[in-house]
Image 1: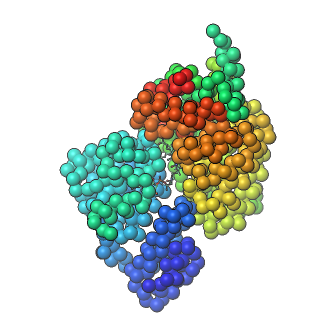
Image 2: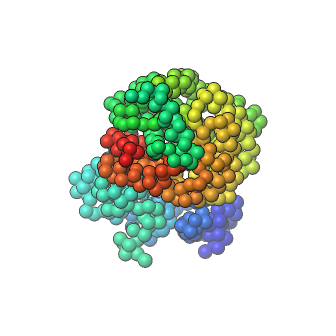
Image 3: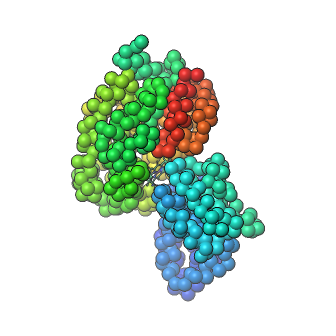
Length: 209
Length: 368
Ligand code: B12
């Protein structure tokens, strides 16, 4: 456990973070352990965001340097999700390319121990269906920032149902203009206002404290 | 029966009274939207996007056919204006997209961190013109006709008795750089190279102020949008906001007032944290226009005695709600934010798929 690394991640101190990752690598610390330190730092970032000490500007920076560190570590990270709480598939609905919010949700879910499958933006229904069949997620997240894409979400969720896959997954929606009315309209299980709501919903669903 | 010229004066005075924080004979209503108008009148997005005269006529006809409006916020539209304003690429229906879907800004890292050095060494004018020509495929040639047609469009609306509120759009260096760099990249720049970004911003600001002043003089307009999109309080920690966003924005607003033009503060996203700061702007000379992400009742509480407020029927309600819901919400605004110092509109654009009957309900609601 490197407190220096955790703090560097939490404080977004890029230069300390890079040198510490390199030092740990040289000492032969397992990639997985380094990643866990980073994830712990990211959890602190998430808390500071919730407490309004951090803003989107810091979340984006954190995601950026997390990626940078992960690239430095390289190596075998396949075990990183072994102890995962469950699988979360997420994308931005077709017609919509906003991805900042989606990236935050996937990063936060990843840091909270979920195995995340990120489908990207402008995601067609067929891709959601394929991902559900392939990854058997407990939760599917759809991000949508455009009122014009509401009908796309509705169609997507109906098609998931028609494919006989709806009963096995909970579907969450979120993004700027959505609210509970939107969730009812498109047939989602719930609307989440923030990434943290998503974590709480998923944890509750899977009975994780 | 009043003539259109009389109607125009009456409406303009109504708007001026609201801005002066007085109580007009009734709350004015000034809708805004573009793709909605195309959808409403069955004009193909591909045609609307590329024919500025058609866009203007469609917008004017759409809104005036839905009720008695005092004005429209914008007289023309072209997706290329978005490109010009944020240095982003846009995808155009019929060219990059199917003919029947609205245009879309496609944010990408169009500007690199080296461009800050270019601005510092060669000036903003050089950078901007080179960017429009070489990275945005000769954008000046595409927006030229749009700017060229704008005075005719304003005159046309005037002849119909309709005030054009804000035909000019001003953007601070933050908004331009953030659009050109992409929001995630720009947010990392502010941390990784703050001094360089600020130096480039200062150089850009001088040029932007000068160009904007000329644009306002040429247009001879009632008002202009001074926009806040990606510099919103909700996105930035207070220190960054204080350094990179507010001072530049404030200067643009002050310059606009100096020119005798009404700054329409087009504030998308949530600005609640910093509302107090807007008291630094000249009193009873601005119009705060939120997109519903900032709680409009909070705006009233903090700024109600200082500037007029416009808004903010949410896009979601216009698309999914019923005329009754819209009416109820508008009356709540008219009575709760107005009747003094208030202008009714949608929160940012009425969206593509707003129901015409909902927009009509909004317009009718000022009558009682
Ligand atoms: C940045 C931005 C852009 C950028 C996007 C860059 C990018 N890489 O994402 C660009 C410039 C490309 C863009 C383009 C457009 N945009 Co835009 N954009 C925004 C803006 C300013 C911020 C969005 C954002 O990133 N917010 C920050 C993130 C963190 O917030 P968030 O996405 O809401 O996510 C949080 C929560 O909602 C939640 N969440 C989000 N999704 C999900 C999903 C799940 C499952 C869960 C659990 C939670 C969750 O978690 C996140 C963290 O807490 C908004 C304004 C706003 N207030 O939202 C407009 C906005 C969304 N855009 C809008 C519009 C209209 C457009 C365009 C159509 C404009 C145009 N004519 O070109 C295009 C559409 C392009 C397309 N096809 O998608 C409108 C939409 C209004 C409407 N009618 O629906 C908005 C609201 C602006 C406005 N007031 O008019 N935009």
